Length: 105
Figure 1 (cartoon, helix red, strand yellow):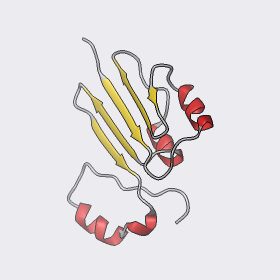
Figure 2 (figure 1 turned 180 degrees about the vertical axis):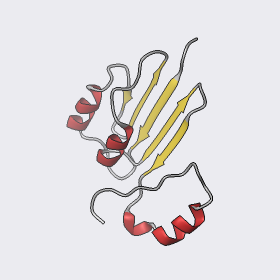
Figure 3 (figure 1 turned 90 degrees about the vertical axis):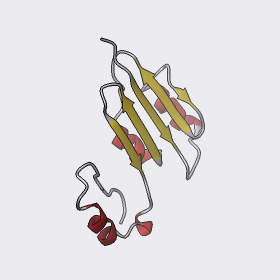
Figure 4 (figure 1 turned 135 degrees about the horizontal axis):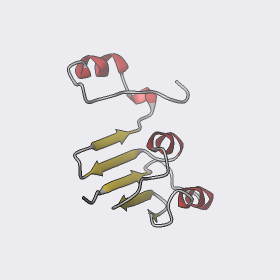
């Protein structure tokens, strides 16, 4: 049985520098890397990077899809734009959503 995994990352706030793109190239020689994105799909093997770390360092959006049914969407927002109390109240009934914070508050 073949597998399929799709990874896409988008940078909205700032473009990736050439040095950033070189670090990302070290994670995959086949990825499509631009000044604002990293996209790769796998029919065998796995992605060498950690999506959470890539989001914390470079990207604002991440989409992951796999043919066995796993779907993940990550959105990075400045903490000043998120009212955690209102968001937590809205998401209490959701068992498939996780809200985390990182960096400076």
